[in-house]
Length: 226
Length: 124
Image 1 (cartoon, rainbow over the protein chains, first blue to last red):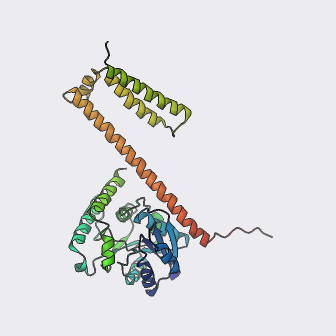
Image 2 (tube, rainbow over the protein chains, first blue to last red; image 1 turned 120 degrees about the vertical axis):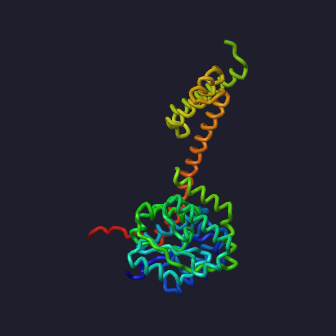
Image 3 (cartoon, each protein chain N blue to C red; image 1 turned 90 degrees about the horizontal axis):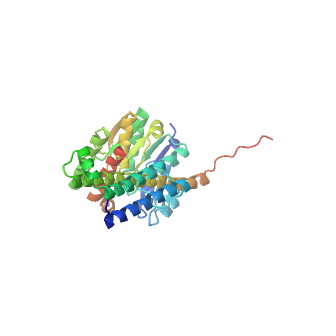
């Protein structure tokens, strides 16, 4: 498959300080088709992404990570993408792992989930516990056990892109994708990926504190009931 | 039958609210639906009925199987409030989802401007 059919989608909210570096790293890893969705940032995320020469789209108001990823996926489909990978805009993911995700898709998997298990010892204990709790809730509500249900680094085949139909706008999106994998019986696998906990990305992670975690669980339950 | 002041006030308010609901439905104001009208009639009609005929609560308590008519009224009220909250949350979720769609379509318009769809050419 030609590389021009592979797209990287980056949802970004107030990532003006790092987005250029993230884009540059992805390019150095050999991937040119990058779509950045500025999710109603207050800073210059959109301008920075545009200056970098990527496809930059802007949500006029903040709608959440799930909504931004969905916009990015729609945009990539419009550009003719056949494989789409998503990764966070705060630089916590290593673009060097993208190649492994694509390889798995080429092997015949429809969804590849990046599990932040490489150098797990670097992950703060509190975050590991929160991730485990999220995995348990995701398994109980959605029927599939995965080792990192909240990872933003994932890759989708064309078939998966056509079948996965998400409605969540916020962080519960990541778990909803797991539900869609189960519902559509998609062939999936997990591969270990590196996560880089810089002072900056940890600061961003703080925004997903205990209360936001509870909100995400509530939304996951609500999505099933409603 | 002698009526207390509170019974008369509740009955008047209930009649006014039901009248307004029927009027809205007939004139098509505020996106009326038959469900909205039914909810209004049941809620306000129920309040007027309980106010005018308090003995209804005894029958209600027997039907529900709860001792004490006041407990039955409170329980019924809780169930109604819960249903209303559920309906409100559903409406909020629907509006949130529609808002995301509008924001997404607006963002994607910029992509279409960048890559305009080829226009069909007329054969010479």
